[in-house]
Amino acid sequence: MGKLLRTDNSSALSARNDEFFPIQSIDYVEFYVGNAKQAAYYYQTAFGFTPVAFCGLETGVRDCTSYVLRQGNITFVLTSALAPDSPIAEHVRLHGDGVKDICFRVPDVDYAYHIVTKHGAKATAAPVTLEDEFGSVRKVSIEVYGDTTHTFLTRTDYIGAFMPGFHSLPHAPESLKPTHGTGLAALDHIVANVDWNQMDKTVEFYSEVLGFHQLVHYDDKDISTEYSALMSKVMTNNSGLIKLPINEPARGLKKSQIEEYLDYYHGPGVQHLALITGNILNTVSELRKRGVEFITVPESYYAELEERVGNIKEPLEEVKRLGLLVDRDDSGYLLQIFTRPLQDRPTFFIEIIQRHHARSFGKGNFKALFEAIERDQALRGNL
Image (tube, rainbow, N blue to C red; front, side):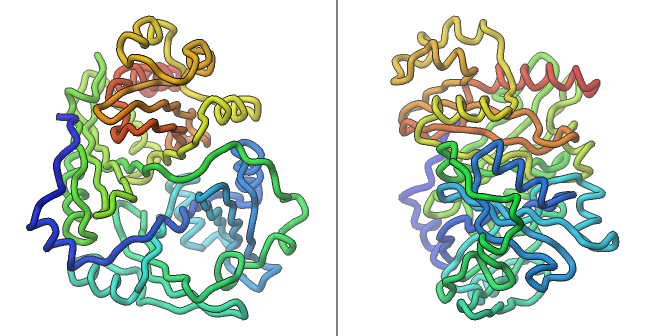
């Protein structure tokens, strides 16, 4: 296990994918949060995102407030409710701050809707067109795991700041101003946690409904410590642009990080976003200056690092000083580091990653990383 699976040169897979629609990119990730204005300020100040659009009472939207933030090709939408009986408020009450929606940009929303519903997806509503003076977008959303959704969006006819209903930055509150970025460039992958014995069902959903295929499988021997374990399968679309690892708990002596997440998120959801950078030394140095807290591994991790991964471009002393993890596969190497949870509940966090041609997800770091997470779990009384 833990091997990249061969999925190319398969006539059966090629024929199957001909039926499905192309996904052009991840357009945005939407969070439901308790206070969108404060959350926007945090992601701006700590991670270097720039506010680009806003909707709320000032723009004629009566039920919620949303802030759109961007850095590189990453777009976050932070949304909070304006009434206690809102489904947004209920989502936050149950889950805390967390990812509600992952939006895929597609060339034809209606064709995407036809395909996914044909294969068993449940849409939250029929496709809808939104219009303003800057053009139109067309969108539809489907249910995936837990309360998480995927939106399919076509915006080829839109030239506004984000989409109809939003105003550009000059109309946003004065407290939110453009900021300097931290070198974050794009979304590398998005990781979901699902409940016991739900990983294969979720994998089947992505395969049957969206035409994704399995890129890699990690079992409980690959991802385990003395106390806990988990299993993971990574799903990807035909182009390989979208990568979605799906985790589930595995039996262990103590509570795994996935069980802790499920306990506090109260169901399946997005565990973390991996954000890619072209210079992880500069990015993590800047994030640490801004107060971002990271999981720490013991110094013993670095004792045999050079022997394990070979030569790398980055100075090993800097790698060690910043607490970066390094791993190598057949294609190259990667560096990565993980924040502590970004809210009071031990749920959502962010990974910073730089790839030097590596295609894997840091299997060689799993044990050290999960032991570090277990130390934090123990401090919380949740191990």
